Image 1 (cartoon, helix red, strand yellow):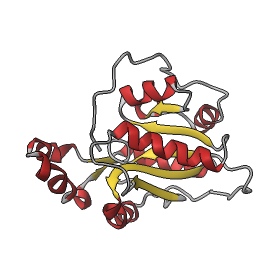
Image 2 (cartoon, rainbow, N blue to C red):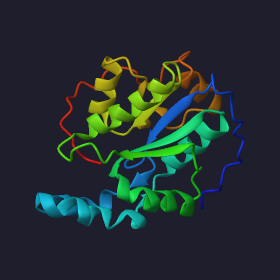
Image 3 (tube, helix red, strand yellow):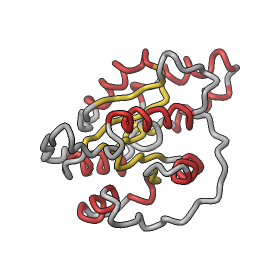
Image 4 (cartoon, helix red, strand yellow):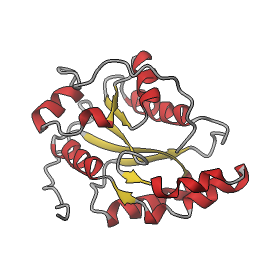
Length: 198
């Protein structure tokens, strides 16, 4: 059955009462797994080869539903990706072409951040960017990598594993992001950060 576009219920909140949820692109809403073979290329070629397939990524159904649920609950949806800045327009086009909500913003890997920086460092910079706007605005950072989620949670960031949110109803999801309820599998995933993937 084809996915249906969710009704747009977003109501903009006041500047002092924003509630931001950062949603990772690759692995949560975009499935690039069919192009993982490109990462076996030499370092100088692997990322250009991988990025050449951005428009061909499939949509993760659970991520699609989650993005629309976040928007429908009135949270400010902001997409987070470790893709470089030059992919911003292409990523925006992909989100539009696949009927995903526009969100407030799309944060990419800053041009000032070295390629040696890990995925975790890029994603942490996005969390800090939101918190610099207001310490209480960041209500969730949703990612598909358990090591990053666990590490961020240990730093006091409201990090959540996308798989733990799959299937939650709107009320429960809203309570998770508002901090009044834990995701079903809140236990540590007992893994270490070793990934540098996008």
